[in-house]
Amino acid sequence: MKPTFVALDARSVGRPHTGDATYWTGLIRGLTRFDSDLRYLLFSNAPKPAEIPNTDRFRWIELPSRSDRWWSLVRFPLAARRMGARALHVQYNLSPLIRRGGVTTIHDVSFFHEPEWFRPRDRMLLQRFVPTSARRASRVVTVSQFSKSEIERYIPGLGDKVRVVPNACPDEIQAMDVASARQLLRDQLGLDGPYLLTVGTRWPRKNLNLAIEAVDALPESIAPRLVVTGKAGWGDERSSSRATSTGYVDNPTLSALYSTASHYLAPARYEGFGITLLEAFRAGCPVLASDIPAHREVGGDAAVYAADNDVAAWKDAITQMMGDEDQRQSLVAAGRIRESKFTWIDAARQTEAVYREVV
Image (cartoon, rainbow, N blue to C red; front, side, top):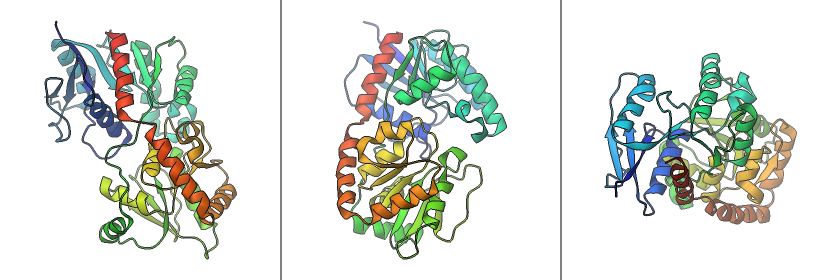
């Protein structure tokens, strides 16, 4: 029987810790963890990362190109069809050359919800090309029921083609022994003593200033510093003598930060999912999150929530959480249970079911 091939645009695999890279890497690893008659063609413009298998079921295909746009619009779809792919899976923008069998993952449509969160050129490209990609696709995958409702709100006419497949925690983020984690942080960042943690690229919708302002409002007697970790991004960030910015850190360092933080703060105004909540849960770090639909969907009863525009509510919530050891232990236990409900093998099985619908 002739095998059925599925092609993935895997360019972000192996790149630094970003949402796109986390998604592809987790999905591919999940696909390797069960038997299937489908065969996967993993296309990239870079050499195969060591963690990706090269087997009969998974073939890494390096396809060089001087232009990322030309690669995604022309080189990838033509090469995938030549090799017999019957489904082609991308994130966001789907080439017009993919007339059937196209699957696109759209994580969120925040560029419609609050356009001012984006630079003008990025906003224009997303608003122009993502709707046409969604309408062209045979199926649209998204990561939460909230994101599905937003996609259907801002991109009408999709019918019954949107499928929800939740993300999971990256394998690279693990709970660490506290003593080892503290030693790593002293060596890597010069960081010692208690701290609160927030993680996110400096984009306006990540709302990091809320966390900074809430910590600034805490009494000196109870307030540890706030460690802010993530890529530079763009937008104004409040300066504070009580906030320490580390920039981007590697996965072992991030695991150490989660494992020794007193609490994790997730102040985003809008998310399609909320992987950092799962990262904190896995590492045993209690979570205070903005009260937005995606956070509720991911965190359930394992997190504490406060409004995404209320500094006083965040200050009060942090004060209460830091003074209640019983609540801390309860949140840690609930978080580990909650995180275990999201796995990449489940995500992969559900995504493979989408491929079967398409082919």
